[in-house]
Amino acid sequence: NAGVTQTPKFQVLKTGQSMTLQCAQDMNHEYMSWYRQDPGMGLRLIHYSVGAGITDQGEVPNGYNVSRSTTEDFPLRLLSAAPSQTSVYFCASSYWDSPETQYFGPGTRLLVL
Amino acid sequence: RKEVEQDPGPFNVPEGATVAFNCTYSNSASQSFFWYRQDCRKEPKLLMSVYSSGNEDGRFTAQLNRASQYISLLIRDSKLSDSATYLCVVNMDMGRRALTFGSGTRLQVQP
Image (cartoon, rainbow over all chains, first blue to last red; front, side, top):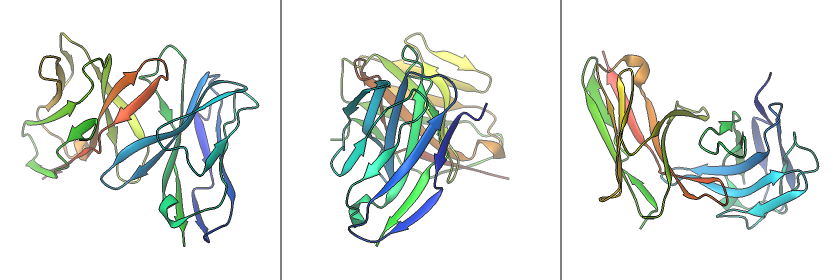
């Protein structure tokens, strides 16, 4: 049982490049979400999904796309990277009826130059 | 005004000390409250839930004051291993099942 896994651990991009952050969980959780963490601001919700085929926007969705084709995977796509997207990205998952017990992945540190 | 506000610290305390953190939240309709712990450069992990009646887990005590809209965390007999950032977390939107995080309070326990 690997829990929540994220790849890559670290990435450097140039402005305008696109990339996909991968997230997978093996706990059969319905709910998955993406957060970004910036100094002094706490984690902010980017997008979330309540099940395969269903996604919705969070607090800061601009510049990001998501899809949920399977229960296990929830990739986050940066369409055209900007320096403002330099951050640490965390993927999380939980059972639908236990949102407080969110399991977080180890994070992806992204630097956009 | 931030939805969930915390004193960023750092709180520097000696081993064995008692330390308390407070957190205020803006949405009076919030239903669920939690404390998460985050070690340096690691992912957040649930420390404990916060109930209206207060709850205790070993050396940790969490309390909720709905009238004043604040949550507290008390740590007794601090250990070096308690050094971390403590995140106050509120579920303000049960429909989204999304958590709103405070920016965290850093605790450094010194020998």
